[in-house]
Length: 69
Image (cartoon, rainbow, N blue to C red; front, side, top):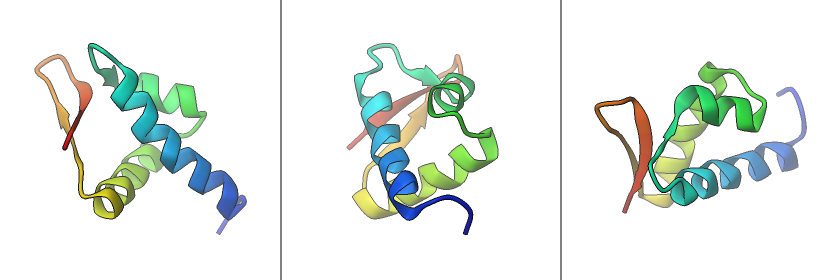
């Protein structure tokens, strides 16, 4: 694994925080930019967050992510 586990853990928490705080949702591209990762990494990380928290992300018609519990 590249990078530190602590960095990844922090990033995983950041994903849920950023999506929850985005009043009108956030695009995958903006979220990846904010976290300084590729969209592929973001997609993998989002599945980990969903699996570990039991919450889901949903995407609106404009491609913006929202948090669903």
